[in-house]
Image (tube, rainbow, N blue to C red):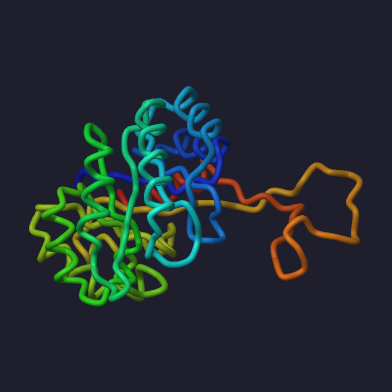
Length: 248
């Protein structure tokens, strides 16, 4: 089976590690605690310079829901232009209506802007009211794949819907399981769902090299429960081990 692995990366460093580990493609994101937001111009540019594998970029101006204002839509269109100028292989998008339907017009405009690049519909799909209707609409828009956890917190929990989606997609679009995919469950996910592309992060905590640490404040404020002296970075060995488990 010709499996393809996409690593969700949070930095250029993680992206380089993903390639070392044998990834087919990376999805570069900022704002991982918010579910992923559009990375900076510089991050995209340096990733493109350093990577020899496929580079996709998420186009998402903020965390939260997938109901976007006119200003946010214009921002996404401009971000797609920049991604194209920088030589990105694909973009990752997803707009919904207030009723939990696929926003056909807005997605169509984003896809038109991305002409010449691959388009993945991201986990906005998992917030849709009717996954099977949404599947058909996303196919009609011309997206190449859907990233989904089967409308559950993790792909393992959503395995039943993932299997149904793969069957209903019938090779018209790629169903790519993501969320909680790791070396312990990827083989069983492949067997249960019939999917051939998988999305995971393979990140591990790396301690900051800061010696002096001011204990009196956090840059993210008191409401943020993130350890600012830990960086979660994709680990090449972890990527390789997960791929090996899938292939074996």
